Length: 81
Image 1 (cartoon, rainbow, N blue to C red):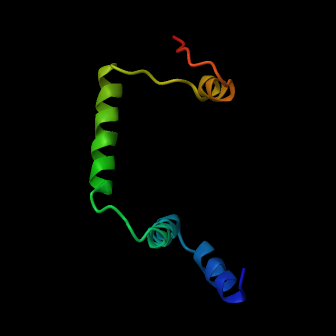
Image 2: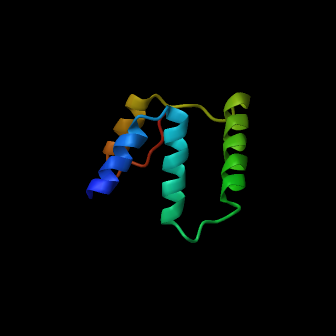
């Protein structure tokens, strides 16, 4: 890492979490020049839908230990109850 970049990083790491998050978001956005303006609204709608599905009991959560096992077991597409 260039010395200037290291200085910037060192200064950024001293900020509070909210300020760090804002800088991180800005940097990430700068990497994608073709940012989809409707993306944030679409994700917000998807998150709201998933929350409604959880709240209504239509879908159920899976403990991380079970999800990890499913991820690490290749070729087994069977759902578990």
